[in-house]
Length: 167
Image (cartoon, rainbow, N blue to C red):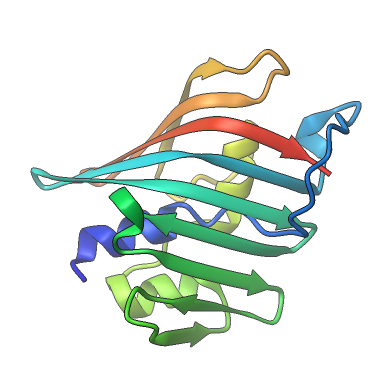
């Protein structure tokens, strides 16, 4: 797979959890540790552009992220927890590392701030952006981000969150 596809995959490290549907709405969704987002992600780098669908489930520190192209083409699954991260690519090959940042370093040649992305998705301000500039363009009625952009050294990331669920 090309480098841009891997950038999209790692840029989306957002989620994991038990996948049970619930209408529960926490008092403050931004502090919820059990959530799921579904949406789209677009990445532009050096004149190339890629888009993919995103399904991220988060359960405290455990996450499962599925990123897939049109009609499920190029599907990738990422599973992580404090002990490490595992990426299963579209060919069924498994890649492992102690952290998402190390895995992105191995595949892309530089680490992406995956730990911060969880906060960015929820619209929670963090002290460290690791050189990324994050902008929120629109929000859902519950105050959770709907459309955001992140840029860093010629990489432009756009995330549209169609659906938030809290468990």
